[in-house]
Image (cartoon, rainbow, N blue to C red; front, top):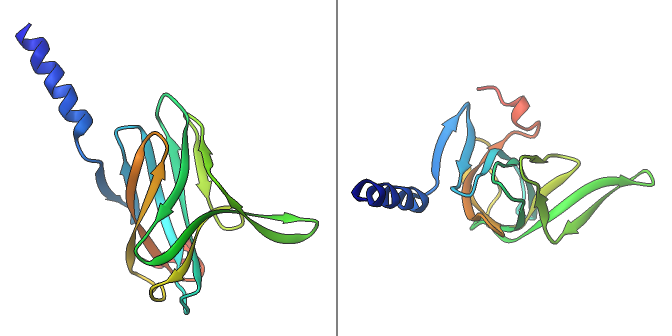
Length: 160
């Protein structure tokens, strides 16, 4: 009985353990106890403070689907979820209320597709800097990651 109680307490402590963070090849990784992993978080540098886009990969390793409801950052007065795509030969951007994260799947936010739009930047995004972004998920809750600011060509064009 004593070992059961110790195991129960240890299991509960692990569930309450804060999300862990580590750097891997310059890509920010953040995993919650709910099984959502965020990798390859980046944005292009900007010259102005109007807007910018954040890209990443979200992998849902949980046993149930989750939903990305939104994001916030102290670097922008407003953030929204968007999907870009071509309609009748014209690129269009449409706001999304939420983004589904199916269990066992990776959803990629990439140029020309899903992205988080930052509007009303507090200052231009400078190449080589980072800033925090907090994602809000229906089941996993809040996950805060660091956004790596790249050059105009994105992370593939970074010369590290």
